[in-house]
Image 1 (cartoon, rainbow, N blue to C red):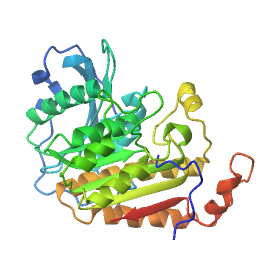
Image 2 (cartoon, helix red, strand yellow; image 1 turned 135 degrees about the horizontal axis):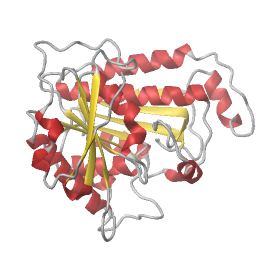
Image 3 (cartoon, rainbow, N blue to C red; image 1 turned 180 degrees about the vertical axis):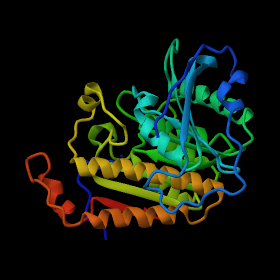
Image 4 (cartoon, one colour; image 1 turned 90 degrees about the vertical axis):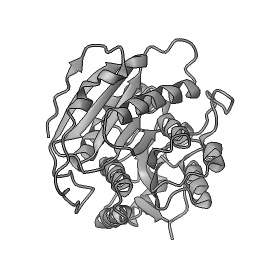
Length: 344
């Protein structure tokens, strides 16, 4: 049995970027025309925690509606593989998740992240979802794939969940520290509830995953956090395979490659270096697992679960400092429960 959660628990190759000139229409996406041909037989993964066998290339360009998209492609994409589309968190840049995107692409999947710039008027959730849907239409129109894995962090996770309930092409869903509402954006017509959208949806995805950081604090309030998303999907059986990773030694921005001073100030929290590394590894492994599940590999999330459980056990006896900022978590770390994996 997992130990009790703290009161403020919240479920939380070298690459050359080529900047291309502004394009007036999504139909001219240069990267799409150059996507690699699938090999005769895809290499089977033996580990999703470790980088995959494929070399990764990246392009970046501006498309319609002032959307800047970064696309990471493996040298040989898996046949029939879905596109992994990632939405950054509030005031986060897509480049802060490049490590995650490269890792996913190294396992043979096409990964794309994006930024929406220059929005005039109110920047609501509905506006963001509309922009994301136009980008999805462009991506699917320019490739041979018909499936999609939607993913996001914080507000971006909420937006991905909202979009997933609208798009039949969505095969799998990954939510990293999702936040359904906040004091700055309470539920309203312009900021609809993703939790309610999932409840109202009859969609069933091949896989869904929720990654939660215990130290998200006020940035992911209890009741609208990752635990809430996991519970709604579990009760509604919205995914044939569902996994939740709860990390005791991780902060709300733990999945990012680097955190700005403003971000760290907005969601204060301290994690050990080992805990932060494990959280990023967990995020990347789960991302590959949901992509593989969408591709039809039924045991992909089971492999992830076994890998992360082994990773946690390998550090079970690690001694952790019990200073004022970490004392209430120290006992759990020594017990080897830094990562708690729940699967359905």
